[in-house]
Length: 82
Image (cartoon, rainbow, N blue to C red):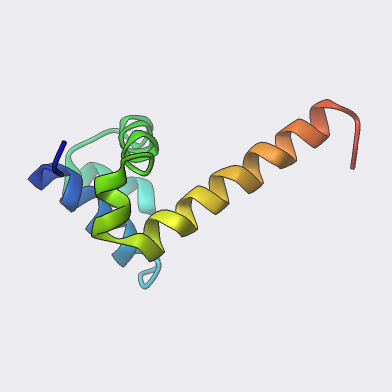
């Protein structure tokens, strides 16, 4: 399924956010008119899309790596490792 305008907007926001400081949650509410929880839910699903990967492979691969690292950290803590 091709990316919607909203999908591209979410990816562009996330890509641009690295270059800006400030409160990300406020920007999500103000610019995207989403709650931060909803934003991250949508972004999490979006980065699993082959179309998102084709649209911005560097961003999507970076976000997938970050998610995997966080998951591994939680798993290690739950298992008493670290």
